[in-house]
Length: 220
Image (cartoon, rainbow, N blue to C red; front, top):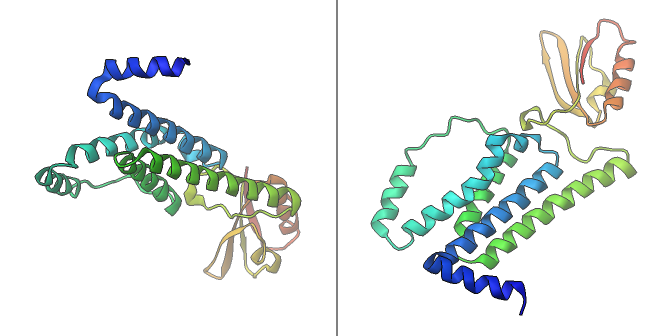
């Protein structure tokens, strides 16, 4: 008889009716940790803060508790919907991806109240997709020498950036794969480039430095 066969009966006896809830919450914590680690692998630096990491772990558990509390009570369900409708989130969402992450965490809590198998399936699928995207980005960077994804300022990732102001349109800047934004104000073309590879931006700044009436700022 293995250790698991000895421990499980003792847990069932100790926890009694609370044993299924203990299993569900344990799986939610493990699933949240996998989601958190996959985001860190994807260089989503915003999840490294205590508040975001704690949110990703606590949100599924809180959602699970609410789901269980209102599952068999129609009146309580309607009251909870009314109460939640009064909540206003003041913290701005950095990107659609961050919103998707929060929605995934909420979905984990809801699904855990229905089926542990579906919960595990969701965690495996999301983690697999994240790992695949990380690998695809690494493969493109190392073998094709081209970044697969552009990085937005709003995503909260700390990456080198290059800001350029020019009275004329610079073709090779406009067509650069590292270009994240371009606009024209008061007769000046304003470019913003970002890259995880600082050397690329330094090379571009050297070229720009040879042009007249062009200013730039490199943020490392």
